[in-house]
Amino acid sequence: MKEIEIVGLYGAQLRPCSVCDVTELGEKLAREQASEATDAARRDSDLAYAIAERAFSRFGTDVRVRLTPIDSPRGLWLTLRHRLGGGLQVLVNGRKVAPEPGKVLDALA
Image 1 (spheres, rainbow, N blue to C red):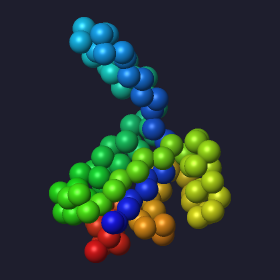
Image 2 (cartoon, rainbow, N blue to C red):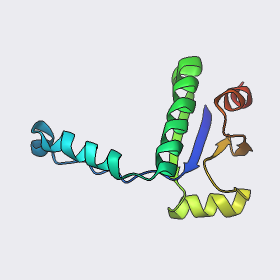
Image 3 (tube, rainbow, N blue to C red):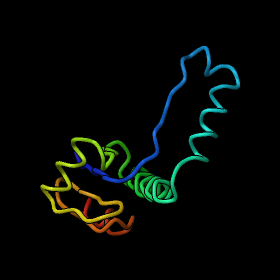
């Protein structure tokens, strides 16, 4: 199986309980989180979405996409191990690739 690991800055995601999710509270939380996210977090999330969308459309279930927050223990470890720079970084099957959808797809092929 092919694997893409996207290391970046992502906004916090809170899931309301199932009762709250049925009411307007679930939508309100999602709107608040989107409006409070930093520009960098929004850019990273948008780019991660574009990469994942293209990978799934081309490879279907043969690809696994993992989003790793840069400020998590795994994100810090990957940053040190692979000498990742700032901003969104992508690993394809454990190798650093330019964070551009076309280059990620080329590395998967």
